[in-house]
Length: 238
Image (tube, rainbow, N blue to C red):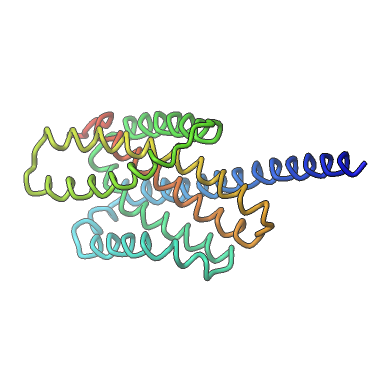
C-alpha cells in the first residue's frame, strides 16, 4: 500500500512539474514576444522617420549604445533585486533601446528584405528552440564553447572596424549565425533543466524572476541571429 502511494505521489509530482514547465516556457516565450514587438515597433517608427537621422547624426547614438551596454551587464543582476513587474518593465525598456539602435537597418536595407530575414530567423529560432527543449543530448559543452565564441565575435568585429575586410566580414557573419543558433538550443535546454531543478525544490520566487532572465537570453539570441542573417539576406537600398 505504501509503495503504491509513493508511486502515485511521484507520478502526480511529475505531472505537476510537466504542467509547470509548460506554463514557465510559455511565459518566457510570451515575454520575449512582447519585447520583440517593442523592439520592432520602435525600430520601424524611428527608422522610417527623420528621427533616425537626428539620432545617428548626433551624440544621442552614443548615449543609446552606452545605455544598451550598461543594461546588458546590469539587468541580469538587477532582476534578482526587483519585483517581477519591475523586472519586466526594465526588460521592455531595454527592448525599446535596442529598437532605437536597430532603426538604422531601415535606412540601409529594404523593408521587404528585413521582413524576409525576420521570417527566416523566426522559423530557424523556433526549430532550434524545439530541438533544445526535446533533445536528450547534453548541450552544455557546446553552450560553453558558444559563449566563449561570442567574445571572439566581438574582438573580430572590432578588428574589422579598422581592417574593413569583406572576407573577414563574411566570416564573422557566418560564424555569428552559427554561434547564436547554437546558443538558442543551449539556452532553451538550460532553461528547462534549471526549472526542473528549482521546481523540485519548490523555489517559486526563483521561477517568477527567472522567466524574465530566460526571455532576455532568448531575445538576445534571436536579435543577434537576425542581425547576422541580415548581412546575407538584406538588400541594400542603394
